[in-house]
Length: 257
Ligand code: MF3
Ligand code: CO
Ligand code: CO
Image (cartoon, rainbow, N blue to C red; front, side):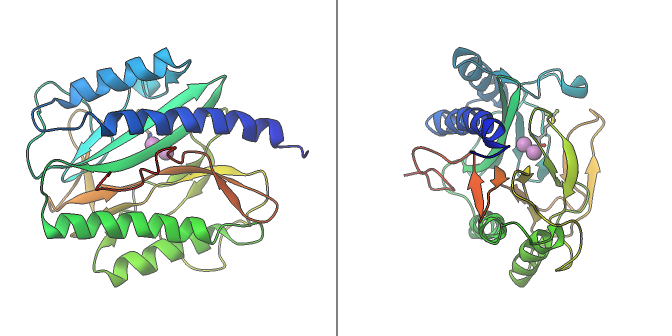
């Protein structure tokens, strides 16, 4: 036992529900459905499994999850006006609250066949997140995380979005520290056991610049290039880390088979 085991137990429960929600959605993603329908499925699943969707009414957000299509970087707002079509790449970002604690996770989904470029982007984004997760343990610095992601992503010719970052998370949705997805080794605060935060790199085919649409939420790439993202909620343990938002079905990245 240690002084964070109760917190970790609650993070595990919330993280598992968020991951299960994405697992459920995986079976439902197909050409012709609207992002609003995805929102409804997610909302009901989380509610029916003892949780609440954190984005709903968060700072005026009116939907239960984020659906970010193609050149949308993050915070895409579900709508009936957009049906999925062949070649689309979609990020679905789910945050569940259970017993006051938060589990925040996102994955990419492909509709039918997608371009080679899109597949490469998705793979590089996933790999960058996992490379960063793999170095986690007490004693490393926050900057080591960003450095790991940036070095890998730029070696593939892609760019790391600067305007959004990972975040501390526990019984608060977004809290200290900011977890940047770029940076220098051996800079920033030192990680300690018991810390809980997200890693959620947003990676673009083109330049890293983003702009926010008039709805006040949807962030898109300025150059309209494709963008991808994955997210896990993680805890730092005595000698490493625990991923709270892992899939029971081993769904990690497309193709989900
Ligand atoms: N889930 C997002 C994150 O990873 C936050 C979404 S806030 C919302 O931090 F209001 F846009 F839903
Ligand atoms: Co997050
Ligand atoms: Co999220």
